[in-house]
Image (cartoon, rainbow, N blue to C red; front, side, top):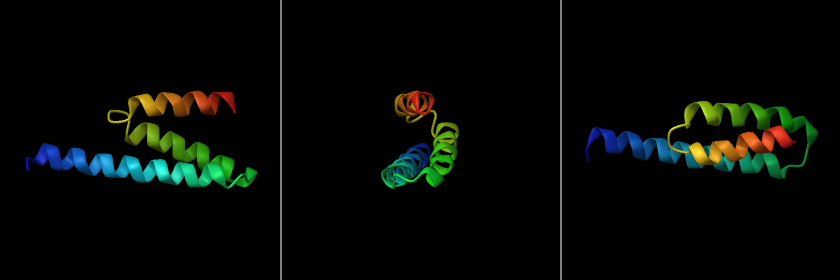
Amino acid sequence: MSAKKVERNQEVTLARKSGREVKNIFHKKDDTNKKDFILLGIKTVINFSVISEFSNINLAIFLLIS
């Protein structure tokens, strides 16, 4: 497996993990977690902008609405 493909697989794994973390925070329905959710969303946008650009746009829209 090429180094580029290995790196891509690692990025996809991290993006999936990040998505699960966002979902877990969101489902807690606790105002104290809103800051954590926003910070994690920003971190996700910065770290995974290339591989999950469409998801990040949805997340950014969600953050603007809420």
